[in-house]
Image 1: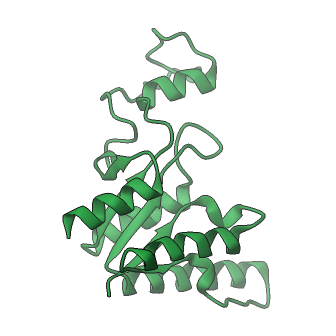
Image 2: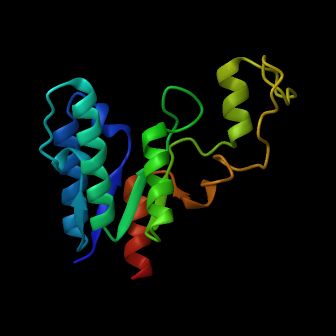
Length: 162
């Protein structure tokens, strides 16, 4: 059975372990093994050591998987969780198949303008930096992996391609 690493900011939810189990069950029901970051039993003597150990454990899970499904929905701003974006890039660098989903399919420029309270005609932010405008839902470096607006639709797409 192929393994799917389940990337996303769900690890910050109050019921994160239960939510991870729901995603893993959906994987099992479609013939895959889901790997959730919190499957790791990680410890550390300090916060810095714990952070390092979490990172290494998640890298291990990504290396062991065949596929990554990533929640790339806006997180604390117009862009996704930076850790999830890193995992997507790392998995792509390893040649893994990556599928992403986002519950906000507007283009990145519109999301940024709204969040910053800018006029729809604004092409620069308050720091005078240009707002990326390629008509994509996400930054051009990983926008192509965003294929759906939900985890379930990513999983369905994966099943259809098999």
